[in-house]
Image (tube, rainbow, N blue to C red):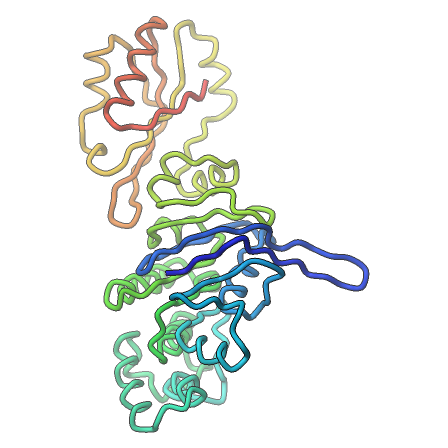
Length: 338
């Protein structure tokens, strides 16, 4: 488990100071794939660098597997970092070393015996799908293959936590999917806690069990991915979600619909089995309203169906209220747009 308590980070120069993180509080459960998303400059990369103490926090504490990282001596910190793997956006491979030798590098630093190192590399190469590229150099690899080397290197010392700093940002969409599938497989196989820093909501949608939204140095929202997607509370979370589940209607259409008497525009968010239920037909039959489907979208959150329907309801005020209550009774989230 990871506990981040009252964490702040202030960068100070001779002329000025800048608050990168302020009063951050998070609990990351063991075995979770925890996403931290924010715009550029929000503080997310500083947060992940504080987690393994590449940046020293100005205040607060970070507790990983019962150890307070902020209280460790230099020697203790170097040893503890062996249980925290790190994957970087731009791979950070040693160009003069082969794939195998890049994986070997952290094991050499940790002082592993040669026989044990050889065995560990043999275990990791098939795990990341690079058995046939063991003797290749980074210049001979694709971006996806380079990141697979980075993943293998991060796993070399059998860490309990894997930190990913924009691990897919330099990759094309198809390669991104394959890397996310690999991380999901690793999480399931080893019950490894994975923390992913990203500015891409599609990464959160594909792989994460939980998410925290960071904006201007503060955590503005956090929770299970499903609850954040269905009922986002912050403006920045709504913007991120609309980037993968667009449901905004053109302003001209909204203006035209506003002129219709007895009309109301709502967005209905549903999760799981509700996607296959005949909700619209039941709504019309039971509530006496006319329903005009304006926009709809169904996708997945990991393996769970998630979707949004934007509807125009027409009827009396009592019918409209009854319709909203009916939808809520079916465990759907209803948002009145107009």
